Amino acid sequence: MPNYRSNSNQGLSLPHLMSTTLFPEKTIVKPTISKPFVKWAGGKRQLLLEIDKRIPSEILEAKGFTYIEPFVGSGAVFFHVMNKYGSQIKKAIINDVNEDLMQAFECIKNTPQELNKKLLRISDEYFSNNTEEKRKAYFLESRKLFNTKTNAAISNTALFIFLNRTCFNGLYRVNSKGEFNVPFGRYKNPKIYNPELILAISEVLQKVDIQCTDYKKLISKSKGPVLYYLDPPYKPLSQSSSFTSYSKDSFNDEDQEELKTFCDAINKKGFRFILSNSDLKNNEPENDYFDDMYSAYKIERVQANRAINSKADKRGKISELLISN
Ligand SMILES: C[S@@+](CC[C@H](N)C(=O)[O-])C[C@H]1O[C@@H](n2cnc3c(N)ncnc32)[C@H](O)[C@@H]1O
Image (cartoon, rainbow, N blue to C red; front, side, top):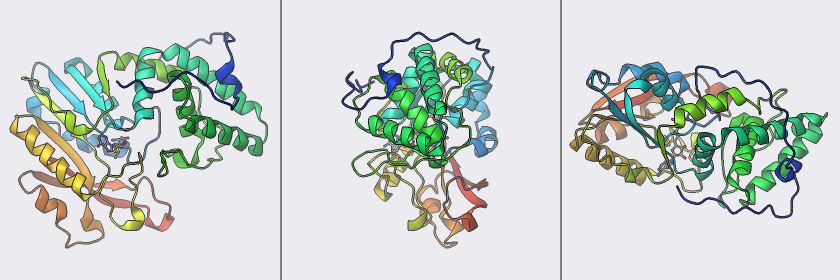
């Protein structure tokens, strides 16, 4: 993992980042189930069963397998696979190019208790503001501090989770300078402090290799069975539905083509993959872009509810692609 941040807090003062006070320990009951700790554009919660059904029996019947998720996002599929097949997984690798996100996974893995203390402090501070206006001001000050990129890992992760819980739609979106710019979300009771979940995730992550690099570097050297789940930024159905700002670098057609080359490379090595992407036929029935590109593989269409769309009339069931070898 790269060394993300320096330790200094410049200028701005949010008490939770300065305090060394010890917190009264609360009784924490661990849930058995781990699940995403952030909301993420393109989250795959609603497609879990469709994806699960397509995990090859050859993988599940093997003595053990390697699981690799190069575009992990919030990890909806990763957590599902770990909860259901964890005992069969010999090795798991999760990766995403988003540094704040992967730092958060690392931090939950290695320092869950310290992170929980920070989140408790932030949650207490946030709710001690008794008007929406004051809560919004606290949000904006936290966002500014987050964007200085000068916070130590645990503080940065606590801010990242706090902003995700309290921002509009739980989105992560950055501008061209890489600054998180999602507005305040006006939730009544956002769950900022959820120690049971953080501990459950930490336990799952103990045997997981966490990386933050370009997906192309994740060609496994394993000799045994390997399953990849690939969930790249979708090719937009139209310019207005475009959401590719998970990071300041967008994912364009050239990237989609390179991803196909990556699929060919892992296929050649005998690894199995399941890939999701948008179905361009929703808007243009004649559009064969993905059908042509992946003609050598199995292409299936499944129904999904559009997760992020600002226009209410455009919400509803649409078709998405699941491509596998
Ligand atoms: C559709 S989202 C994944 C959503 C995820 N399946 C979930 O359930 O939350 C696509 C992810 O790909 C990441 N990404 C974009 N370009 C990448 C690259 N070149 N290498 C690795 N990850 C990348 C983005 O940061 C984003 O988190």
